[in-house]
Image (tube, rainbow over all chains, first blue to last red; front, side, top):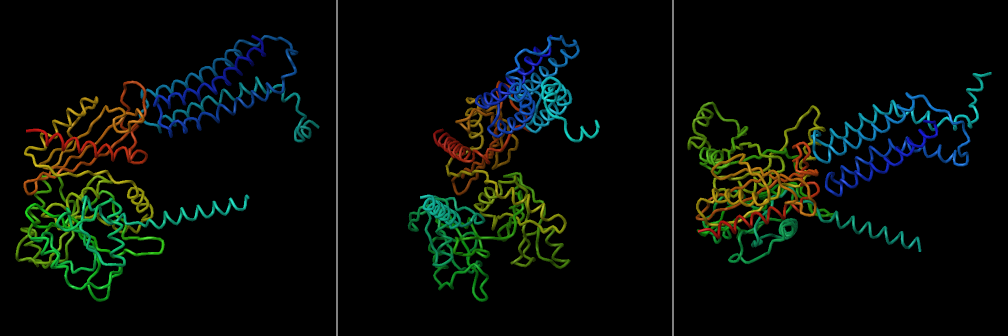
Length: 156
Length: 395
């Protein structure tokens, strides 16, 4: 799989799941799986985390909109491909699973527990997702950006 | 145009704020709980307090013959107004003397102003069911305000009528499962203390000996319980207990107290019916009523006069517009009084979200009194009516 393909898949996963998870929470609110306060609190916890990743992705897509497929079509190593696809998918699945468990009252005894679980999952996955999103979507940006004065001094 | 709009908005905001403020605060004065009362009040502060008490509960004012109770708000010699008075005429005779001006401050001469409510009983006598001294009340430009000490959530002070301490304590234990936590009384001599321990109603003790027993009740149920206990002939006065002053971390304790005190009180509905074996019949009715709605009823506490049940597995029963899981703690109190059974119903409701058939754990439930108080109050009213109708309709 080439870097472009991985980029496209991960970008789609993040952007689609960003909205899908929010819609899922809103749908559960309508079905009375959440109270209004629980729904708003859940959205306020989940939305910023996704927004952090999707912002980088959207910026990269916008920056590269005229570039087309100009880059060399080099196949990425299997481990990189696996990590880049596996971690975002598991992250989204775990988030959805926690939301489902809470809405159906399985295994989570209070909303406080639910919030704690969300925070832990987001913290744990941030360790992996940060570098992955950075590697896939910031490479072009770094190359285009002029070097900072501090870097220049060090280079000199 | 913008300037004009700003002025109009400012005026509207100030009128709204003024109206909200002018409504005043008489939340410390207990509720009356009757549909029609005869109002006996002087002008000034007493008149305003009487009007506010009547307006708060939307009570009708009627003549002495047509009303359920007599509301008196004026400076009074409280010793002249015992728990029970033989007739309405006798009560009015005691009021006939000229009353001094009504103020909220302690007057240097003359008696303090107080609010009393006497319930008319079937035998013609009247029973005092409310006594509130208006000390701490003020008629401010912004509205009527009654202040006082911070009240301790979950505690009631009860004083029994003269000669009824022992029997009163037994009645409260047998009827409601209440045992005193502590008591407060003036210092006695060693001999008197010995007598008091043996018999608190002994004639050898001073006649004016005042003993206040403190009972624990559920927080937010203090006012409803005071309302019920004050209607018992052997209870001289039941009122919320003031918080003891705590020097260490007092702010934290008082802040927590005030948080609980500001919560709405458990809704209470009362009625009078005449039916023997009312508690057993009510329990059967409640079981059937909730079984039809998928509820699971568990009896938590049962005393002679009180039935405390918990109803689980309810869905959208109280909060009809939502389909939340709900559970209810229902306190049904039935008191026989002069060939009538007085019915009091207190309900605490809790709700939780959840899809599917799995009932959420207790930790997920939140009290309905924050967001759905009117639903709970309406449901309590409707259920009390159903119980009453059911009991009346049975042979």
